[in-house]
Amino acid sequence: MQIQVQKWGNGTGIRFTKEFLREAGVSADDTLNAEIIDGRIVLTPVFRHRSLRERAADFDGNLNLSDEIEWDEPVGSEVW
Image 1 (cartoon, rainbow, N blue to C red):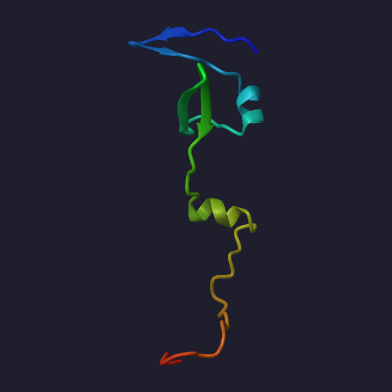
Image 2 (tube, rainbow, N blue to C red):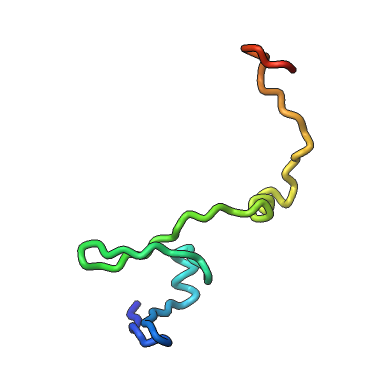
């Protein structure tokens, strides 16, 4: 894919197609880290913590937060 570097306001910008970004796993408003490695521009997504709502979507919105979990017997001076 060839793209053109263009003037954009007071700066310079590069535009990518939606399909290109979708294939790279990047969405609009994502933050990317830009580096120059061996004379090449390398863009990589920055780790972003997902919100509780986004995490719950992985479980159809059901997180089962009300269930108690039995970890193990006390091993020190814990009070149960």
